[in-house]
Image (cartoon, rainbow, N blue to C red; front, side):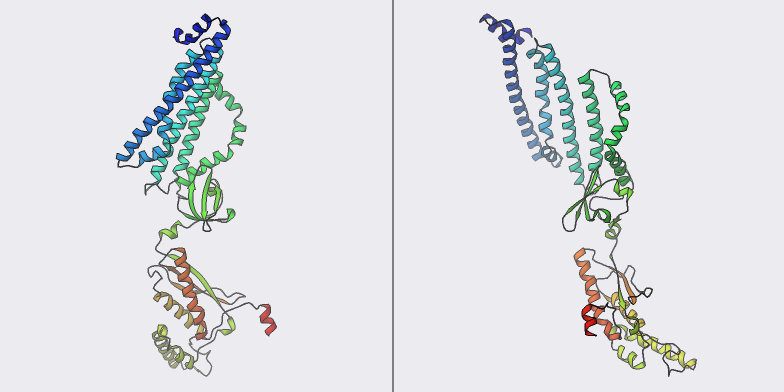
Length: 415
C-alpha cells in the first residue's frame, strides 16, 4: 500500500525535488488518476447495468422493470461501485495528509448515505408508479405514504450524517433535538398537519384520486389528480389546477361527488316559478280542451268522473267553481309534468321521480322537478335537463299559467 501511495513521490525525490513539494505533487497526480479512473468505471458500470436491465425489461412480462429504468434506479445503483473505490483510494491518495484524508472520508460516508436514499427513493417511486397502474389502487393516495416514509428516511439519514460529521453519538443529537423541538414543530407545522390529515383522509376514505370535489373556499371544482403529504391537486373543469392543503380536507367542509358518480343517475333539481295570479279553477270547457293532451287525457277522464260523482252526490252548487271539488290548472300542470318526466327516455325510472310544490315566495309558486338522469356525464346531463325544461317552459301556456319574471327597465317603459 505504501509503495502505491508513494509511487510518484520516490521518482520526484530522486529527480531532485524537495520532499514537501514531492508529497503534494504525488497526491495531486494520484488524485487526478483516481478521479479519471472512478469516472470511467462509473460510466462503464452504468452502461452495463443499463444494458442488462433493458434486456430484462424487454423479455419480462411485467412493466415494473420498465418503471425502474424510467426512475433511474439502475443508474443510482451503479454509483455504488465507484463510491466503494473512492473510499478505498482515499487512504492511498492522502496517506501523507491525514487531516484531509479524514475530511474526504467523512464526505464520502455522507455521500454514501445520500446515495442510499437516492436508491431507496427511486425504488419507492417505481413502486408508486406501478401500484397506481393497478385498478384497485390507482385511486389511493400512495404518494402520501411514500412521502411519509421518505421523510423518516431522510431524517434517519440526517442523524447518521450528523454523527459522522461531528463524531458524536446519536443520543447527543436527540438531546439537542429535544431542546429545539418547539422550533422544529413551528417549521414543520404544515408537514405534521399534512401527515395527520393524509392518514385520516385515507382511513376514512374521504377523497380518492379521480374523485370530483367542490371546495368553494379554495375555488376548486373538478377532479382530484394528486394527493400528497402537503397538498391535494384538483384539475378544475376549465383545466386550471387548484392546490389545496391536505389538512384543509379535515378542517373545512367540501363536497365529494363520488356518491353521485357511483349511483345509477345524476340528480335534476330545478323549479319553475309560476305567477300566483295565473292560477285558477278549470271550467268544464278548460277540462275538455286539456283532454286533447295525450299524456293526461286518461287522468282527466278518470278524475273528472270522480269529481262529478262527488259533486252530484253532495248536491254541490256548481254555479260557482269554488264550490265542491274542482280541478286547477296548476294541479293538472303538475300532473302533466310528472307524466312527462316519467315517460322521458333519459330519466332513470328506478330512482326517485317527483314533481312538488314548494312554499310560495315573492317570486311566485315554485313547482320543482326532482328526478335523476340516466346519463351522468356532464355534457349529456346538461343537455337532458335543458331538453326537459325547454318543453315545460313552452307547455306552461297550454294550462293558462304564466311564469314569474322580474320587470326590467324596458318592461316598465312599455307599461
